[in-house]
Image (cartoon, rainbow, N blue to C red; front, side, top):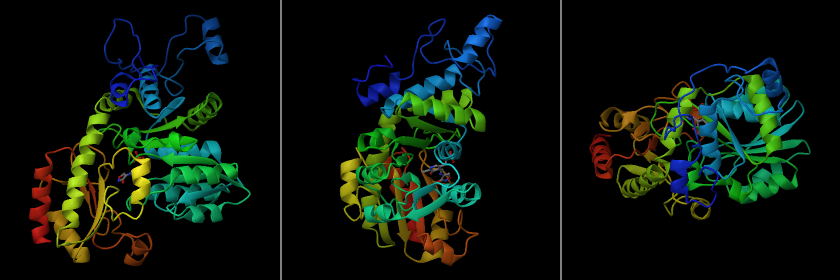
Length: 394
Ligand code: LCS
């Protein structure tokens, strides 16, 4: 079943990565073991030499982790996937596998903050140079390419500005330069965007978000298109050690079963909320890929199957209005992260980016009234009523 490429996406969400196990369980059992017995010295030897497939040690491969990896690889139309201990472990593994001292990477400036810091600190220390660009502008990507550029790295829509990059255009630029296009597809999930269809070479996700969907796991995943890349990445991950564990893999695999219906509900509700916010007198502007006012609305229509659950908006009255909004919402919870079934709200100026100066924040387009909203799957009228009572006081 897991190998049938012709099944529809929502069917694949339920059946991918499921194989035959002893006793015939319907869901993959949790192989909560660090290591696996060899039948003999010769068997152990042949597994290590790669002559025979089998499990050796959970950092290298484990059936529960592998089942989840196969499921996500099938959803992204990939060859194979590699489960990682967090989204950042996935980002780190991809950079470690693809970049060496003296190489250059072009990175979108609209990416999750720690990805920027990873490049500016650890990879800079090891001699990798980065140019950050506005990836919604293909000319900016093209002008940043250098003879030693090995990777073009894009997160689209980007966190938290929701800037959208044209993946097909970016892939063309990367390939003309013999570089690889790596896409962080966390905000859309494979239900709404399939980067391989637009020419991406490697995809990664924070599993912590929509793929797991229930705010109870930290994890990451990398999806590749061919066996040679898979072997190279697997060796890198085995050496750097940032693997996911069997129990978290089990939870993610369970979460995937409702991915298609969750993403549909997130998208329908977010569209309604974004339109409602856009007409609200206390709101300065709203960014949502499903609004005609989004600067890359046309690309979003071409590239996404639906527009997802993330909204960014600016509340009038700046810092204090944002802070009041945070302190008066009742249903939406104040928390970082995103992509779960519960609505989460975040005001970077008073919360995650509070330690930065206002000037540095504004350089990163984080204005004082900016609010990021991860729309959950509660009844949309309840979400709107909660925002309405809070905006009345903001
Ligand atoms: N990529 C994106 C697009 C993310 O939003 C995050 C985390 C990561 C990678 C890293 O994944 P992690 O290691 O946390 O699993 N984003 C977060 C956020 O916006 N708030 O809290 C975490």
